[in-house]
Length: 221
Image (cartoon, rainbow, N blue to C red; front, top):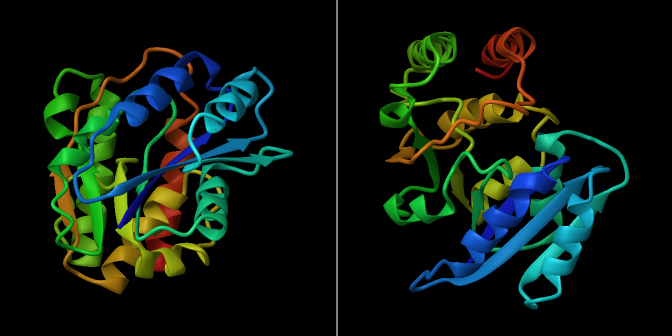
């Protein structure tokens, strides 16, 4: 079986190389590893780094958007262009460790990581805002999410056919994912992941993206 790591990125030249090297070193018994790097219109040199890395292995793929289309659109592009039995989404900012895939048991068709132990010492507004969103999604979707906003996601090829048709092209993708996952199969796997939140360079905006998360809950539930 093939396991494709989807790494969407936009101007992540400082962190991308380390993420790619970690994925490259992973040992995955029972899987053929695939890497799908999607440049979402970067202008900081990350494009050259990923393009060069793709040449090191025939199972490594580099895809480029000529302009910035959003994280969600980049993930959909990866699924559309590279066929795998399983997919794993890893953000390019280095906050999540690809090695935590070892905690995923692959027993459900859809899995979402959760970061709560790693969030205990993070800034209050971020931790409690995330907790409030997770609680709202859990109540209204009638499924107990641990961390609805976590970017570490694993899903099989059948659910990938749903992902192709997602409407959200930007950070709303994570919240549409949660809604559609419950609709697809209420048995979502959840597994613990580490989280090293960077102090600078965050592309998320707490108000804009928080409101989008609430819109997605209303729109897709």
